[in-house]
Length: 340
Image 1 (spheres, rainbow, N blue to C red):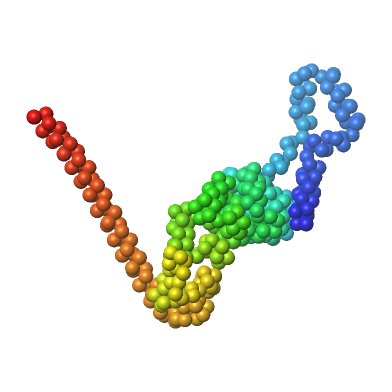
Image 2: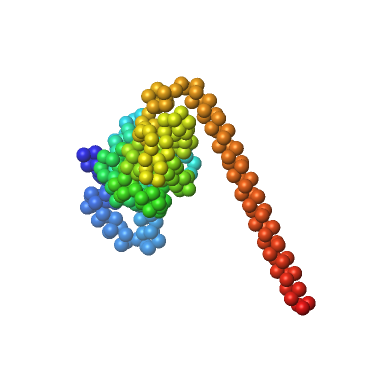
């Protein structure tokens, strides 16, 4: 329904633009005027005729790619919204923003978003002004192919507009990673993109480490990860709550058979609740205890990273020494063989 309304508004605006153009007016030019121009041109010299036609030629029409307050009002924006959007666009100094602004608005309205939502969306992500219409259409089409249908797609774009600034190739890489490295099903990948769209701009190495931590360290399977919206949370948030429960004896890493001596809380109840609920109903601890624990954990992780870094540095030095010994040993052995 929203798509049809937006299409009618755009069609009405296009007709108005066309009716104001010189080509449209020439169709309804009186016959006697065209005849007089034709007759006068036959009695004049070529130079005079050229001058005369130059004087009578109408000024060039305003290009349809230009964004004006009038065009914004024709698209369905209110006076306040149109002025606000026009002021925002005038502050963007990049030429590409002004060039693609009209096509961006057209694509978003045709998608089915109402003018109020479009305004909020562009306030969150003004980078969308610089995206070409062809790129927007490709990215929207790719999201549809991934299973995001009408309704879900509009809500997703309104919730996380930077998604439309991400190239199709990048989104495909993330989808392949989730399917092949994490073994999520196609439907689970669609759910992840709908619930955690920021995953498309996250570092894949960090994503892999987070997945492996939850899968091996916590013993959680893919279906529960999707249900708890795991990828909305940072690795530190996951580790803080998991380790806090583990230190208090309320969480166990499953053995090779996936069994534990206690019943671990569900990942959804660990992550998808606010801190007060987590402490009161899951960890059964005070906020002071949790704050002290997080400070201690931050110190432990920092020391562990420093220790790991020093080990790696020592390993590199040893490797360089071994290479030097091999080189010198090889040369001395060659010399000894030559003496014999």
